[in-house]
Length: 97
Image (cartoon, rainbow, N blue to C red; front, side, top):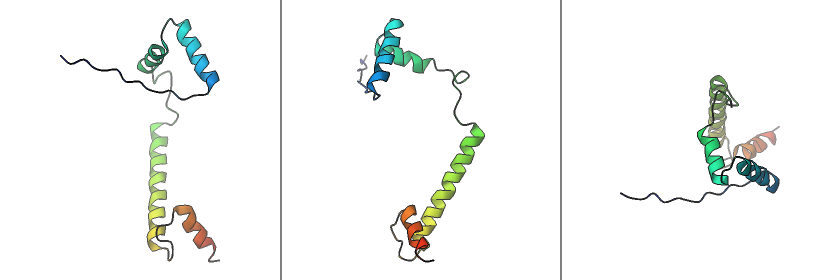
């Protein structure tokens, strides 16, 4: 039987938030890691809803794909814009007026 090794993870947040989390962990009688792991394990989508509905997520994905296709087309078809990013390609087009 092999023993699973624990790996350290870092949490990056402002000092005041870190102290708030530590205080809540202490009040719950848990270590910081135990407190955070319990929050993650017990998260309930029925309580903490997704920010976007599935329909909104699909709409955002479709819009992102459209923007990506436009950026690819601009880089490919715009004279003098080879290798430019979207904003640079738009800047080139704005100079044509």
